[in-house]
Length: 179
Length: 240
Ligand code: SF4
Ligand code: SF4
Ligand code: FES
Image 1 (cartoon, each protein chain N blue to C red):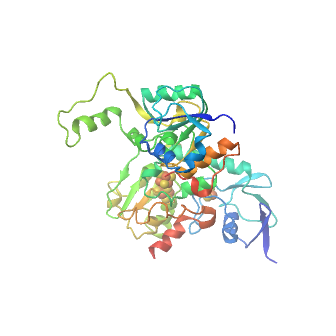
Image 2 (cartoon, helix red, strand yellow):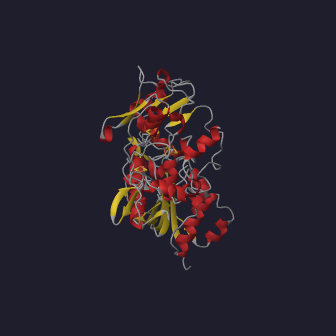
Image 3 (cartoon, each protein chain N blue to C red):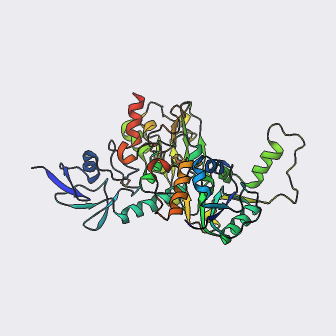
């Protein structure tokens, strides 16, 4: 392995669980460190994604900012991967697709239990919500999917290890699950 | 001399009247299936069990076994086709596996694992469907129904009640409950019915025991469906 590959990661409409699972690789991270250099990622605090070999996306798309970040990742990353249930099918956040956006906002900010000073937030800084939550493959082309809520550290490690070594990507039965 | 035929090069014995699926199940050869349960009359609707006989596509669960026929099952083409069908089933309903009590013991998941599906990949429909929690012991989550009609057959043929039915056609097809209000609580359904124990997915679930078996220790968590078999078979054992 010559120069390290550049990796960017992002959490869109997710819970950071997939990023936690990435860190759960534990001491095997040390094996990876020489081969991977992180670009934009919550782990580095670099804000803008540069040219990368690999992009890992956690979470689905629920607002306008998610769409922009996702498109920037697609422009910059040679391989873009949907990591986890939410990136793959919207996951738990997409359960709001059963209701209209107005119903969701009213329930959360106006009529829900224990709310004082009911008002729907409208600060211009806040990204606008989309009508529905979408899986990321509905917005950009995705090269690979790693299912799981979250995918286990073992699954993520197997994927990175096989990608780095150029072997075909294959998983043991227990490494693939949708929950 | 018993009759026999071939599945993927393996000789499979059969007796008269057996389907390809019956003979394969007896011989321990796995042909993916969702709407089939050997206790009920074959329905032939999910098409997951599609195999090739001398190059022709047939449903293994409805096609009689025949002397000397050559059946292809686990070929690259057939597995790819099954994966496609499975992806369509996933996007047609609302399958949020991380929030589903059936997860890990769900036959739709298990068949999808067997066929190597990593993601549904199509545009998701997100249909608006309801939940019927009216009954004290059983919950119906219409979001996860795959229209296999196993509950329909079980309620009609075993329980002699015909509580469940499928109405509408094509994308409008949906499960209905025969009761004045349309609710399960007002129907003749009882949680000891056969129909309570045949759903291959998380659409008909017993209440109050969803997490008795922890995630990770469930039927398909450690071993594939081709080894452990259908979930309905195991539900029977668990209830005894
Ligand atoms: S029924 Fe099966 S596939 Fe559907 S959400 Fe539940 S576990 Fe997932
Ligand atoms: S409720 Fe379950 S058993 Fe009945 S048709 Fe739907 S998936 Fe099949
Ligand atoms: S199992 Fe044969 S068509 Fe469904």
